[in-house]
Length: 141
Image 1 (spheres, helix red, strand yellow):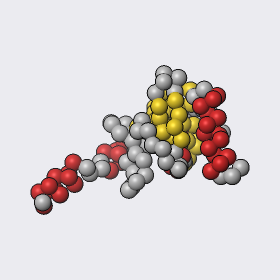
Image 2 (cartoon, helix red, strand yellow; image 1 turned 60 degrees about the vertical axis):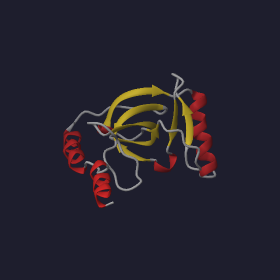
Image 3 (cartoon, helix red, strand yellow; image 1 turned 30 degrees about the vertical axis):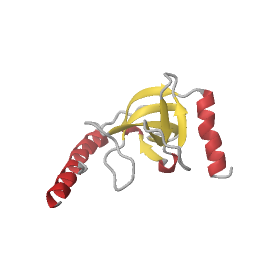
Image 4 (tube, one colour; image 1 turned 180 degrees about the vertical axis):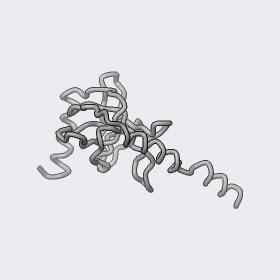
């Protein structure tokens, strides 16, 4: 049992050291991408704590839906996952290539624009309206 537990820990450890090195490079970047509302970008989210969503791969990226990009150096975004989750604080979206994504609305946050790698999709008005309607219900607007 002890060997199994040690193996599980080693195989599931988060790479905080690797993320710290990558974060230093991102922070030194002086170029800012300029996302627009409804766009989905690969974003270096990094390695986070507990149940907070995190990125994967060398750049620790994950797709993020841009909700508001009015800030000069930051934007508000919602991380996405390819796992379809029908939960109270999630919204299922379909991109123009027919792929389903779950918007993790409960993990909405501000991101620095230097974290953005490349634009992946632009949501249709119909799909984006799902997020808008979801917010109206969730926040009783």
